[in-house]
Image 1 (tube, rainbow, N blue to C red):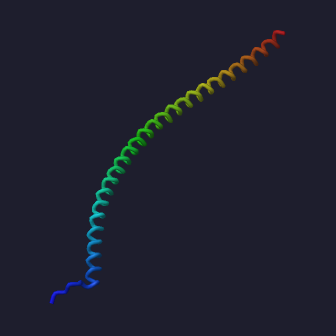
Image 2: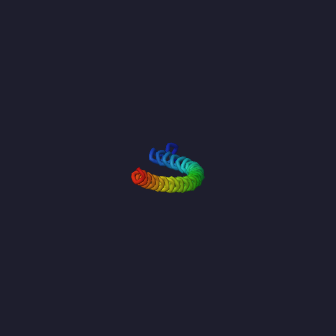
Length: 102
């Protein structure tokens, strides 16, 4: 004897099955989108890493240049202080000579 009306449980199970099939399709699409997003993100990270490396190299070169400039200024200051001491010595000796001749 054939049943014309199906059991409500069977109908619910078919709806669940159809929902699962649809969900799997959506998940498959999302995996593709996720893979594409990851690829774009990887490319962006590589570009950022390259730029950071370039900036670090330029910064290192500038730090070296600043250090060299500071060294040159220190040498100039030492020389100037040495001249100052020499001038004071000459002034003291001139004063002594002036006292002796006066």
